[in-house]
Image (cartoon, rainbow, N blue to C red; front, side, top):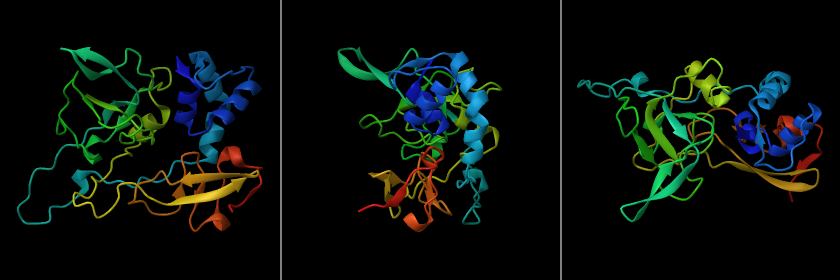
Length: 257
């Protein structure tokens, strides 16, 4: 079972939007962590899935795999294989020999896909599939690298992410499964010299129905075209060419003070 927040993250919408949509199909939500049955998620997908994807089409891939790069010198070296890894957004803790260590949850929620070779930690297994091995990212909760869908993950497994025909039913992130199936999601490793930030630092302050909201660009700093927030809103220059997200359509949007 998945919570309201997890389903909202998978579709790239807010929990408020999901709550209203679920009410329209006869399911009332009390809180963001409330679990949803597979039948409810499947009904939401059949009713709103295509509409959400049509209103917010998946952006063109902005990443290139290592295998696409040509050697800079005449001494060709064997490229590192690219494997789309399995990743989890949640981990827990346990004690081992008296020390607190990270551990996987028995039910970690949705399974995400990540190109670990493009993260700061790199691919611990150098493109080799090693079933059962796991690498935990350091730092506080929410500080891990983004999966293909943009969700921050805390652990990456040495298993290969293979999209299921029925991604939602099999516990896979639908966005990640679609990107991997389409051959997208691979990315160029960050600049080792640190000249460029790995994430785009663009942001926009807009007033939506009277409330000021900060929109952060969720794309990498190598991206082309308009900036894009996680909820699907886009802009190139600023508020003047701001394109609202699907759940903001009909709202009053003005410049922030």
